Image (cartoon, rainbow over all chains, first blue to last red; front, top):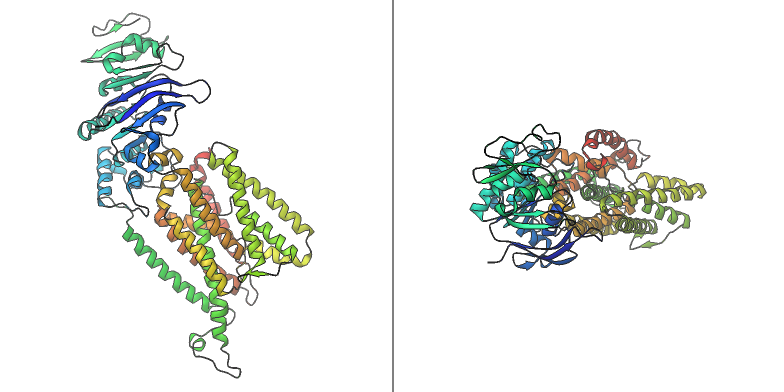
Length: 279
Length: 343
């Protein structure tokens, strides 16, 4: 079977100085990959390269075994769905209408959705807990609710690969976890390959299999790829993000609590039996 | 199961509104300064000279004019729908990208040159108006393309600048024109549907109806495009292709409409918004229903224009503006807060 996502020596820069230098990695089918790193390290740039919004200066991006440039816009949209902080138009499309637009790449020229398209949209409404406001205009919802609608639309697109750019940034705790649970479910039940750009390394540690940690082009190690255990160690996280952390474990997985200079617990050594300060 | 637009509901709505439109057109054709009785009109030749005046007025004068009004109304409403979608701006109308000033300039040049020739029954004035409109739109598109990164924004700016420049040229030409050209130019600038001939109508209907059908194939892409370029791409729609296609088609049908009727304002603004408020924003429905309702709206306003102060006639643009002005203010108040790029 083809590898869903593969990058070979990808170089990209908005100006002459590259943001991504000679980046190579591949994502096996059914993997849940988190892309983490500080601001400006190139996380969103990388997502945009994977959905062909940007073209690499050199190197190759391969989707499902074929060069990304060999796909038509329509065919690529049947392979890759993207969730980002969406623009909400002034026209009052309802939540259901927006979610059904996920089917666009599967419709004919005079495309009207059929029963199976509606079925998929109805499922996505249930899964994302958006059915309650299915008939309300998108523009009337809160940012968090809108974000769930965009996730639902990407699920309706029914693609093997799902890219999400900070899908939980506007969500409350309950819905953050709900989105990650949903993504995990999609990964397990439908063998989707999922790539999430996130600032929340603790949630990433709990849910993701692989981590791609971007440190920025100037860093000594610009990019680390590996399992959560390999990549998320206290020294690495502190070096890449440039912040002191309190590192603990919850069962198997670590968690990182950033502690600034004036944080209440910054100065004295922690007495928590489970955690150790990693200075 | 979820409730949304299906092709069946749409077909029913199109057929129903079309039936209403045909009825409106028939009634409006019978109204006017000269009373026409149907029995009289279809009773054959009679009288001393063997002429049937009622028949001649109905078929030779009223019906072509009613049909022209319907075509122009449909074209302007569709163009409004399309431009509002591709510019992602609810306040866009068919003239926002310079078609009006370009066509206006063409017409004034035609009046000043005293053109009297015709091309397949189409007057030289119409031909120059069409050429002016098409050239301006091409100019705006090219300038907008090279001006900046955000295509939508630079298109709007290019449209505004070109409009202002050509309007200044129009004002200059009007101020130096002889008085005899003034009235006809002013009438044209206000929008004026006049009597026309069947061959001209045939050409216009092929162009406009063909353009509307072509636009209908892009309506789902327009739905997606209102979410912006990135989203459209992610959902499988190439924004550059759709924008060029929709823009070219809508500019073409507007140029045809404007060359035959002058600058009729507000139809392209109020009809799409009324349909959107009533039936929802899905362009697969919005486009055909706006075409039909726009046609009906202009047939009715044109009938008012030629009957209110009969036997004198008002330019139809006056009526649409009187109805459209207050409505436009209402829309401005309602939508401005929601337009992203105004923030």
